[in-house]
Image (spheres, rainbow, N blue to C red):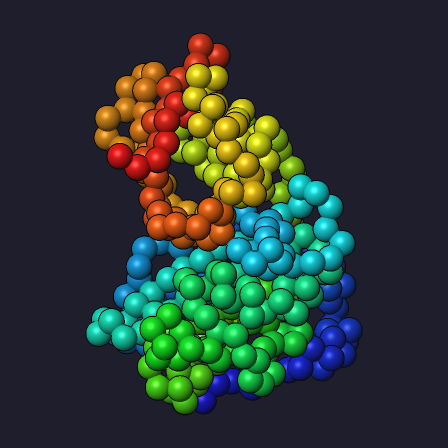
Length: 318
């Protein structure tokens, strides 16, 4: 069965203006999505038979970070310091191991940033979609407010296809690495249309953005995530605030330009936690920073201060 035909953005707007309550939907599309972004990526039950999940969907805050080549990859535009793009990722692999699939959703802080992400589609795909090197714009996909289909060599030279599109301040992406080119393109477009219907439904519901609350880490995991967030922003002062005083030399003796950027971050508590000591293991995809063998995980040791704040006292690999 072929994909369902969807209304173009202008048609949807005309139809929307004729329906009571449309003003709420238009307003919702101009505000950052305030719900759980993991609801906006594809689930295993929505994929063809034979795909298995690489793990639960994860969320992460992203920034206008520089690529290893020194160019901002995420978006360029009227974005104030401290604004973020919220992101969710889900990853799957075919049971025969020949295909990898990424489904991703981004909530931009404003329309300028969302539009800029679409313009930077090859860079966004290359950095986010599990390393899928889809670089060449092939055609415009009939999705959202200007979708793009991209093809490239892929991780193993077998080919990759990605589709990126925008609905309001939400940007969606589906990418597949491996397999035959024609079948891969059809699969990606079909799944992208499924995910776009999820994004549009979220906009129609008009989920409000949550009120801003300052983040005060109160658990070892929260401290670890906050530390990675600060290092991704290349914020030395903030990153040091999550470390014990006698451990800050580990970071203060380095240059922020040498720090890698950590994406698709997953952390879990180790079993040896006590009332004042804890350890966390985090896996990630690292890019940029100093050249050399890329690491894929850190062990992080933390201790609880007299004020109850968990601080990092060591990190790295044995």
